[in-house]
Image (cartoon, rainbow, N blue to C red; front, top):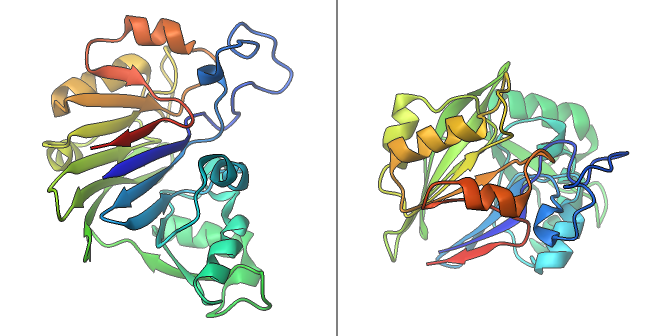
Length: 259
């Protein structure tokens, strides 16, 4: 299994517009964070989770040239605004609609933002076309399974995802954009080799886990390695990495894990 962190930043990104703080002006490239999304390769199956506003640039930077499954965790702008650039993968799939697995809220937001893409085929070569589908509790594929669970995120629920690769049995959990992790989601993530958690900032937030809250959840789940994502400019990468407990670390754009 391989996981590529395309982006690890919050909705404003880092550097932020019109901010000259130490993190936004940092020369450390790990402090330069585009909006959060990941690309998972599971026995050769390429799964893209979310499409940030920088999705096209992220794909070029990380040489993403294949996409088989697309999952939208929720319909907030920092996760959906790059979906028009999925048009290239519609072309690569022979000009047919790409299935978008999401929630009821995600389906409504996709229809509202991309009405021209609601068809079985693109309206013309080079355009996007989306076929909307609810992500089931278990998406069973030849290469493995993707379990989903709902996570509270302010006024909406996001999809928490747990990937299990068929050939290796390796398990990976991705819980971004959540204020808490319910008991059933904790149980689902147990046994994961790698866990990724929302860890927005040092101070509390009404719809995201703070860093301390994320550490508590990580310790409850007990994965050998946890990476924090969706980070703001309130966290310097080096300083945060030094302050976190063993086995927990801040992720950064371009981080690649393979196990």
